[in-house]
Length: 162
Image (spheres, rainbow, N blue to C red):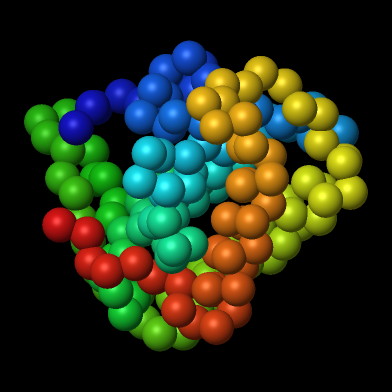
């Protein structure tokens, strides 16, 4: 684990595990990046933060928010936090309570709903993109809708990650 973190690289060029990827610019200039894995999983980066990664059924696998990492445990999220000293970096973890997990998922659903509205209303400027399927934008709308529905129905978490 790196001692010093730096801003994300150029995801269009670097995120080659995402076979379809697309970059959007919001009216305020902020970037949103989205991409699909070959397995159907979706990753969405709202600038540097937050980042959401979903499985092929729209269930949250992991997220990054406010310098914290969250990982699905099937029924809750585990919060992972890096604690750095001069000598070492330790990854501390704890499971979220149902209340905190539900609040996190509700906030995620709000963020995704706003993004979906911007997509559907053409309020985003499409930037660079790499698409093997040619249908990345339409697939993105469908997958974001699925993720929102999963979050609302509290079926939002993927099986525990190993």
